[in-house]
Image (cartoon, rainbow, N blue to C red):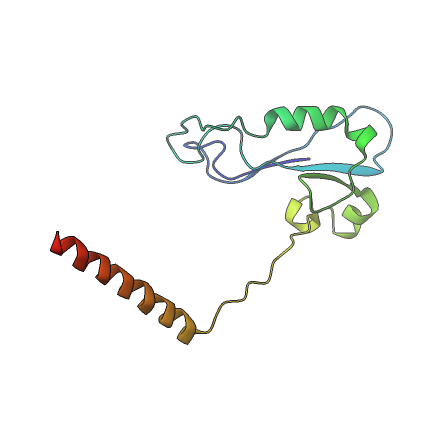
Length: 135
């Protein structure tokens, strides 16, 4: 299952898209997911080429090596999900249901400290402006 970002098919459609790949024969024991972030073009209506090539070369390579690599870390771009788990989730194939997102806790300084630092920087700026005016 390839999850594509919204905007890939703009200007025709702005919704995110999922591509399902089926293989003939046998039963499905696990499903391979790939979280595509970009395909080499901007995601706006103009669809201009970006400086990055996008994920397509990586998708092809990782798909070909998926059995050897057997990715299981759900924090990565691609991973396997057991079919039993998908069935338990009422066959919901939304990648957001299975991908783990790691959040970092951000701690900010107290507002008083930030204000003090701003005042210090402004003081230095005023000193330099004074020097420039004196030239």
